[in-house]
Image 1: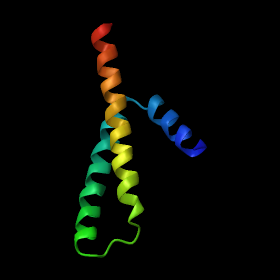
Image 2: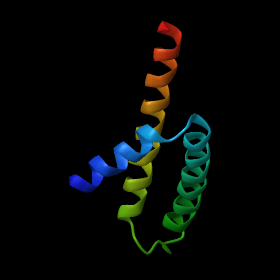
Image 3: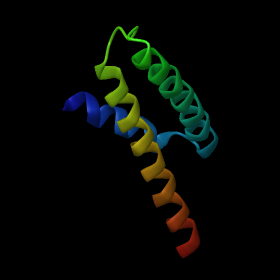
Amino acid sequence: MAAQNGKKDDLKVASDDQLQQQLVDLKREQFNLRFQAATNQIEKPSRVREVRRSIAQIKTLQGERSRAAVKA
């Protein structure tokens, strides 16, 4: 749990461009993991869940930032 809080804090201090780049990288990794899973070559199946959750965290943070920008 402590590792997740540290990761969330890292995302909060990242710039919008850094978040966008991380999102692109994670989506590319998710694509590759789907192919590995389909061909039964995936080494760490739990990584699929980690990547999906990381994508969700970044999208949530981007949404919060965009709503805050609209209010300001």
